[in-house]
Length: 487
Image 1 (tube, rainbow, N blue to C red):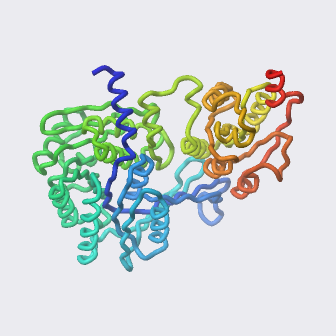
Image 2 (spheres, rainbow, N blue to C red):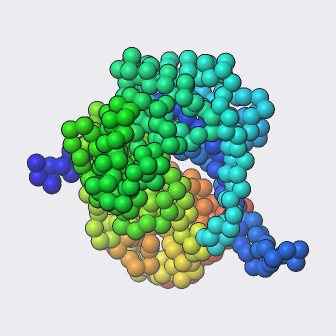
C-alpha cells in the first residue's frame, strides 16, 4: 500500500466517526480555570495577588473523554457519580447541555465531587487546589451503576473505563463491566491507574502511559525494548488483548500477542500535555466503534494526541483537525480554519498575553480599501482573526448576483495577507455567534459604522474588551468596483 493509499484510508475512516457510539464509565471531575493578572505582592504574606479576569469550567477526568468523543462527532453514553454539591450540579449542567450525550450521573448524598481549580496568571500556573473523595461507592449505588452501564453497553459499540481512582471503578465494578462486555460481544478499553491491574483482567485494550506501565510492572521502561517487555508481561499476567503505551512526545507503542508496532510522535511542538491521554482513548474508541482496524485506530489516536499537545489547556481534537494533519494545507491556506479552531487559537494567544482582534465582512473583491482597513486592524492588536460571510450569507445580504467570488477563493486571498493571522467562515447573516465563540479582546469595523451599529459591541465590552473604528480609504468599494467591471 502506498503512502497516498494510507492517507486516503485514514481520511475515509475519520469521515465515519459520526457513526460511532461509545459508552464511558469512570470518575468525573470538574476542572475550573481561574485566569487573571499579577501586578503586586500581598502585604499580608509574600504571595502574589491575582486579579481575576475570567473563569472557565469544563468536565474533567472521564468527563473529558466524553468531551473528546463529542468533538469527534461520536455519540456517547456516560455513567458516573457526583456528589450533592455545587460542583456536582455544575457538572450535571455542563454534560447534560452537550449534544449527542446520554448522561447517567448518579448522585451520592454527602459525597464530595472532585474539583480541581487552577489559578493562572500571564500563562503561568500559580497553584492548583483540589477537593475530592476517593472512597469506593456504597454497595447499592455500585449495583445500580453497573445495571445502568450494562444497559447502555448493549446500545453502544465500544466501552471505555476511565479510571482516575476516585472510587467509581472499584475492583468489583470494573470486573462486572468487563465480564458484561465479553458476554455482549463489545470491545472494552481501559485507561488504567494504580499498581494492580487485576480489576482490568480480560480487557481488550489497556492504555497506560510510560510511568503507569513502570508502576504496574515494576520493570524498566527506558527504551523501546524495555517498554515491549513490560507490556508483554501485562499481556501474560492479565489476559489483555493489547497494550497501547503512550510515550508523550515519543509517540506510542502497540503490543499484542502477535506483533509490536511503534508509532513516532506526531506533535510539531509540545505546549501542554493536559488531557492528551483522554484524547487518545476517545479517538481510539471512536475509530474502533466506526469499524476501523486496531492498527489504523492507533494511528489516528496518535495523530489526535499530537494535535492536542500542540494546544494550550485541556484541548480536544476534531475530525477537521485530524484530516488537516493527515493531508495538511500548505502556504496561506493553513490560516483558513473552522470557527472552533479559531476559538482555540484565540484562547491560546490570550494565555500567552496577546491581544486578539476580530473584524468581519464579505470581502467579495479584495481592493486597496480592504487592504488599508486590515492593516489598521492588525496594528491595533497582536493577532487578527477575520470572519467572512459564506456564499449563502452573502446572497441573502447582497442579492442573487453576489458574491462575485466563492467563499474558498475569498478566504484564500485574505489568508495571503501578512496582516491577517486567521480566517474563518460564518453561515449566519451576522458574526454574532462567531464573536461569542472567539471572545476577541478588540472588535474592529470601518469608520462608516458607529459604536451603536457594530454587531457584537456590547457583547465584547461585557467581558472587558473594546470596540474600535478604523479609517476608510476614500474612493474604494466592492459595489463600485463590480459596477465598473460590469459596465
